[in-house]
Length: 71
Image (cartoon, rainbow, N blue to C red; front, top):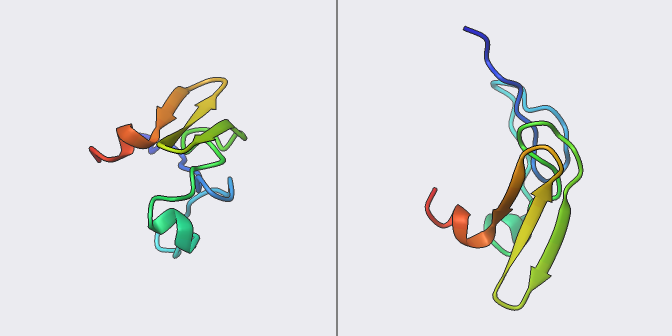
């Protein structure tokens, strides 16, 4: 079974098993939206509003701050 490559949503770099991934402090607090798609590493369109944010990948659709609350 093939494992899908994952990407850092804040840098767009490939995630490598066993290697620590840096997360900005604001992102850890839920204040910074992801800028890159975790599935393909492409730069996303991001919109920030007073009550949250949404980010859209041209291939994988939209995620928003409310959808991450359930993870």
